[in-house]
Length: 207
Image 1 (tube, one colour):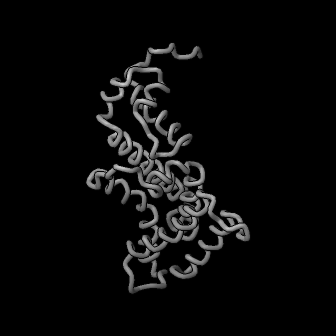
Image 2: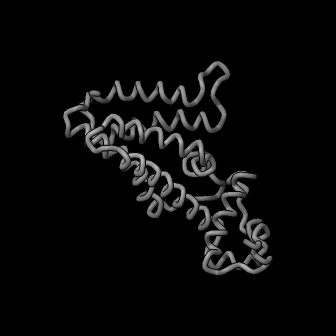
Image 3: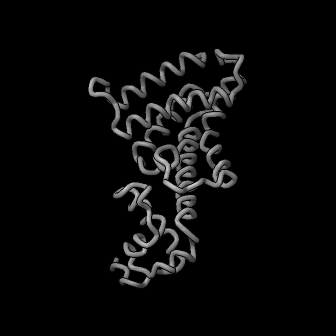
């Protein structure tokens, strides 16, 4: 395929190219350095062209956050749906592994939604909260299935609280791993994750 001529960008895919360029810029320079003008230079287009799709930097950041959450949610849903409904333990482990795999594969996306904030950016919660909640749906559904099967060890907690507690433990471990903050004496991130997930299963569920 011949390269796209400079200065000629098909309008229908420009939004996607802007988002792709934004992720590349974040990967190189970090999210706080995100710049619409720099993206325009990377794409060799006039800066005002970007404003047809994103009114300012914050609008672009919000679009990136939504895309990241959507990808994370889909990754876990696919891991959940790939296994038999009745195999609760396998589904739980699959979702956990899918969460870590996504974070390790897309660390910039993970850090954008869970890590270092961008100075001056205030997330519109009414826009982001629904998709953020959806990223926990797969885990919540499995916890609910354990509950219905009478296989929860903590009857005094509701299903969503258990899911959030599991997430906080998994999130903390993943965040330390992808930011390269594991101590030198530590096992690998994958080994720690496996150990921690076994402890989670033993604490909350009847196998």
